[in-house]
Length: 611
Image (cartoon, rainbow, N blue to C red; front, side, top):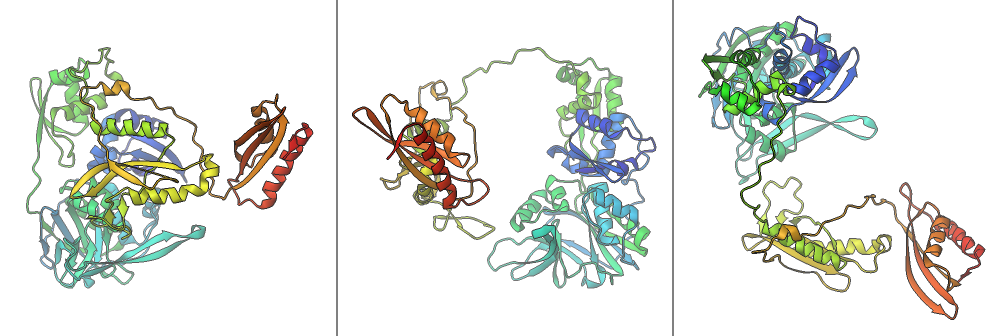
């Protein structure tokens, strides 16, 4: 997540350290820093949030709390401290169809707003996050999301008919999504319209936000055009909800749309954030767009319960190898803002509701270790424990390696072809592009296609014959079967199940060791082939002739291979095949002819006879 140093400073009265010191504080206590960029007078850190902390640290509030604990700096403001969701409103209702998919939905009604440009400070803060300003309402939803980690959305209230429904999209329903921008040639962007339709018999529809007239938005992913906020909007329905992360991820992948909001839901966030995000958003909108808060409606069927985790001082010191005191551990929990009780050396911590990652004693031990600093944890010089038993052999892996090495020794090259096919026994669910909608039932088609594509490149590859093999899974007869298939220019493609007995063998010791060679990419431009044959004295080394030709041919020569040799009396005829290619253009005949002229000249100058 991008973190503006100036924005982060608004959480503290004490001046923050220079950006280098900030980077070190994060790196040695919580998160790595992927880079720092100068943006005007600001400095923006690219903080690499780990997956286990995505639920609370994809926000300035979460990052500020971490920095407060690491540096021992008190925070001067906390967006989670507010007057609550008051007053209540009865002008709108909220219905949640499946609480497993939506555990909480808070709707706020604000009247009398004026949509327009955002104030300069808000534009600048969003710019530091790589976000362009749209209008004061949309900007407010993005700003508060970055502040609190809670995704938010605003609807034009006058375009919403009746109450809010959180439900699956129904058969025959459609939704025009908000315009999305797409970069085109020249760095310009254009608007892209997108419509989704729930086809008949298409299975469970996407989770949507709807009113009496149908879908308004795809929950947690993208809003719709019908209730979009425009310059003429004067009344708002604000959304702050908690959606199931797995469902949002599936929807996002299916639609091929990933937003800042969907990314936060995918990590999983506490439903308690919904109230904090709503209150902060409503207050900010009144501040920058005017209007009055009519009230809120909060559908929260099952409240999140606080969890307790206990750890002993002995456990902390045993895992970390430290000699910390009760006071040391208590200080760490206090700096982190944890509520805890202490019974001699037993600490019982009530996890903050946004910290979904604290569930076992080891989680608390990790908190202690990283806050005191890993450099304060003594290094251990214990030898690694030897396993009680030899590792279990993976028979499929061993069989594949044995077959692979055997075929490569016989001159075959391995290919990897697509597992998708035009025909097959098993259809692919939710295939995004619709092409090749089945899983393959055979390797033969892919091998045959690969052979056709590689034959024209035979000279470039320096091969006399193309011989290919593939080891891969096919789906047939209701099963997944690991197969091996081969094909050559002289033999049709064949395949069979991969099966090798390894019982009783110490197979890991017998596996051959592969060597690594330097990789060079292929040129995308066509190559040209020329042959040359030359009479030389029988005493001349053939490699000397090859080196002479390679030098004379110049930089366009990418391969040279001997392909014929015969001796007559005291002379030897040597024939070579030369392959010319460029990495930046298509060659013309003149390019190859000029190179060959240089080759002929070099051979003649040496006294050799061109055949």
